[in-house]
Image (tube, rainbow, N blue to C red; front, side, top):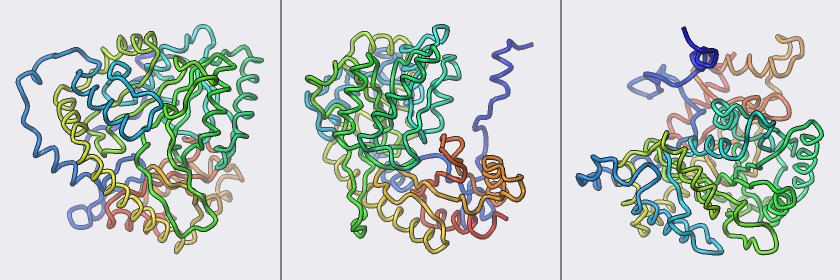
Length: 422
């Protein structure tokens, strides 16, 4: 017999076992996953680096310095962040806390900012990374407040008023907002927040007395498509690159980063929180006892980050490959007549608009049910893709497609979307 919460956990879905992944020769009937945000384009380079640097000392066999990141790794990460994030004030290694992935740190942020029995909550704009609802809530018991900030236009200063309205609406219902979380670059839209919008959000958080948590996990996975005359791509600006003087207490501003995206190293399971708030950091480190990173992963990551000459070349190559793959994916989608959000210049995803293809006649006009049905048809055709409903899209028909796959996999997946889903 299980507890009530244990029974709920037993009913949760999770990845387990063979993925039955598509391969043009070895498994032509396998599944094409457009779901997990992984950069397959750099795995060969990363694997080569790991194989060349996988000589470990005996200290990796021990518990070592604890479970919040070795001094060596935190020093190397601080060096990396100072080189690439352009912080106003150099980031100190003691501001950095590591855990086994940013997922664990998402949960820690919820745990230390909100008390569920006091109706405290976190504010997010939508659409937004779908797994926040799992990461922030499943074990903490808190609830989230989602704000309508525009389907694809949520990066102007106008979004600040929308967040403030969401804050006030929650307060009127007896809910206390304790933090605002943003994805910068954005997931799933793939855009970066302009500096002036970030300043506006920082001022809002200061005026409301809440934390601003900026998930910057895709910070260096950038690219630009120069043949679009009508677009002006926004460069990435970290919240740590903005002088908080006269805007917000730096103790209210926190950054999430890690090895999974920019380095294609999801398997390392290494994420970090960067905060100048000592109390916030201490609380996070105490919770990280339950999500301790591997000594071997930390050793490899330190070796990688210490070699900034290699890192610079690695990132340049990654950005070139991302651009090539994004252009190819867009070409295939345009040729198929599939609409998508065109302004993305960061991250691994394209926000599709498949509303014209929703089988509304089969759901009595229910758009969300039609989106679920279309998703099921994709699954039967051997394609997995995150739905707009999971990402809190304001209207049915949106899907998130991961484009940074090997070319033959990308082509096959889009072919199945177009021809095999009926």
